[in-house]
Amino acid sequence: MNLNFFKNKKILYIFFYITLLIGFFLSENTNQGSEYDFIIVNKVIKSFSEDLFGTFNNYNEFEISHFPFYYIFVSQILKFTDSIAITKFILLHINLLLPYILFQILILKYNPSNRYLYFLPGILFVSPNFRSPSIWGLNDNIALIFFSLSILFYLKFLSEKKIKNKIIYAVLNAFTLALAAYTRQYYAVFSLFYLYKFLKNFDLRIIFFYALANLIFASYAIKSIIFNKNLSYAHNFLTDNYSNNIIFSTTIFIIYLLPILFNREILFRLFHYYLNNKIIFFSCTMFTLLMCIFFEYSYFYGGGIIYKIIYSYSNYLYFFTFFGSFLVIIYYLSEDYKNNCFLFVCLLLAFPMVSLYQKYFDPLSIILIFSLFKNTHTQEFIDNLKFNLKYLYSYFILIYISSLLYNLVLR
Image 1: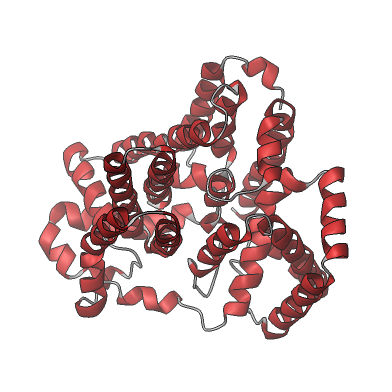
Image 2: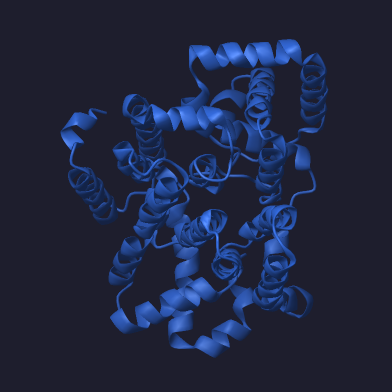
């Protein structure tokens, strides 16, 4: 992609906005599942708009695996507009907050004078899993907006000096993470990461207020899990084979690391890392072999892009890809390994489902890589963003076009 045409960042984002509008009017469905998911949730949204309390009391009958609050919110917009098309159009514009929040994260974490940071959030507009939920009014990006806000408040907390302001940012972090989890409950797992960071680095006053805020914000969820059957349908999606999840998560996450790590110098460093750490290489080999032995998956859906492309051709080639991906990820996590490994474990634990989809990690992985993961390779990538942007855009545009063509073939 030639960014010289888009030297003015406003032109770039106007262009992306127009493509999103075109996708909206053409009912774009590049991640394949959004249209189907919308048909399901549209029933409960209409029901909430007609009978709020009755629908809430019988929510489990709709067989939806998330808390009902987002659908209640959408139902009130529908009640006001009396048009599902206008409601979806309003929701599409709410989704546009995500690139803006990502930009705020980037200028807070990196050098704000780097003008090329303005272009990086544009990557979201070529993400199939940002576009399709935005177009179909689903809750994926809304949950990610709240989660990204929790990251932003956490980073503000780190840069703040005054204890009073630190406490405010800690409470806001807990509040926005709770909103993310009430929209899509798997974000609750990341509270373990934040709790670990707060306990490790900060004083008792902050820990007290943070723990109290979490207890208050999580009280309804705890009550619902113990006494309410509204989320019992979600149990149908839980896996009993976490080997599948580890393999799928690894081969999905690697897709978002590749454009950052794939150059000759980094590959040279990776080779020497394992040459000098043979025990780690042997441990990774044994672990991946064990995961492959217990891998068992018979569904034709899910698994991510790499699984869909490779596994049907050769399961051994797919397992080898998993092994290579795992080695690259472990190398990436090895720098500041306590922070990175804890965060990656949270990412693995967040999706204990039978079937994992690419959309769970996209654009979540992009946001995590440029915000909470700590790695000099990412910093080097940002420092050379002027040079790297065209390759980054080309890479993700290729994925987007492939997804678009694949979906058109399926249709």
